[in-house]
Image 1 (cartoon, rainbow, N blue to C red):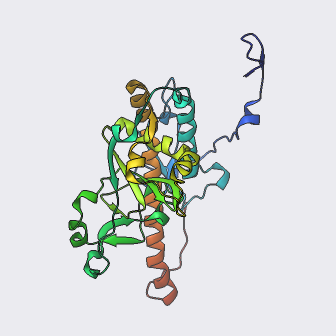
Image 2: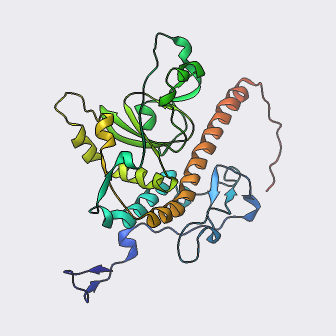
Image 3: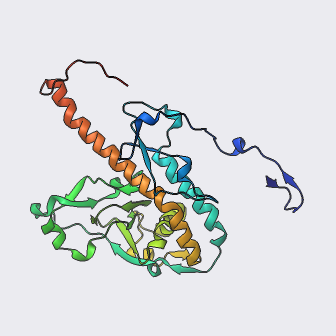
Length: 295
């Protein structure tokens, strides 16, 4: 219901379907349930806590490769992120006008750096090297176009950032935000924050995702190229919410972020498997015996 003219007594009823898209579930055969990870996570009533909240302690999986599920019943990773953002807006919008602290009070700020490109042995190793294209459309960064060797990383040890750091693009393209999934480095176009406390992680991620226009305004300093240097980034004002609320928000959305990361990794493994097997099938290096598939 929606309040009319700020009156406490007058409310207008609104159908839920007019506000959001409502989709019911579908019957799925238990023959294709799995306790081990597959590309498809199965949500059941057991994943929802009594009184509200998501319970990720007993996740089930579904073998959609053998029994495909219609697309309209599939919740894409972007939908999961949108759910998190809706929760964030609902919980923290009232605190936008509360006293704030600089971003540096919430964590360690690290501005990236590129090792000398004259040393070719500094690149092409096992350590992810994040650039702006790696942030586009991502919640977690699990794949990068470039990488560093251990020798390259050793030249700038203070620039290494751990998993669950928050990366924000701050030069030329402003405001792209994503979480790291492994120890890594970034180039100088990206500032990162390593939260002091785990309960600040998703709050900071969501807040930084919502202030794109403010970041762009901050970066317009009279130069041709938009730029938020590390000093400006560190001084970015973040509303201070109660710690108890931050901890509750973390507990509510942490399983969702885990599911997003698992979905991404499962998808990448399946793509790698397809790219490995398909050429061998086409060239005849792998042969499949003809037979019946029984359900």
